[in-house]
Length: 151
Image (tube, rainbow, N blue to C red):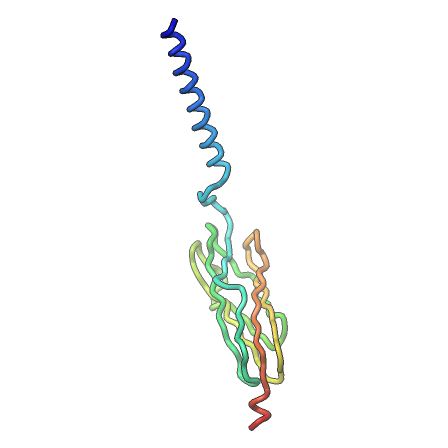
């Protein structure tokens, strides 16, 4: 009799241990804990989405490049790059399609001539990234005319 009770206790321990391990495994798989899922899309990821030129003199054309990477598993297509105003220029680095893992840059320019004070501009990037088909990049500067007036 003692042997049967001992076996039942061991079976209960094995059953509970199995259920515990199964529960932990299910929770781990459902929580997506660090296992990267296949996106099956293009994914545009910028190193930074804003840039501050700081204080600048009126007159020069400011230039900057926003760097990005296609972190998806399909080719990324930049469909259009659109600045928010005519004083701003923006273009890709000469390409419009980027393979998986490939990097590129959006080159911007801003003409400070005839402007003063704080300026903030936007660049709209349209791509085939299904989660973020339109990315907005911003840049700013504070244009000073003080030194020109003192000369």
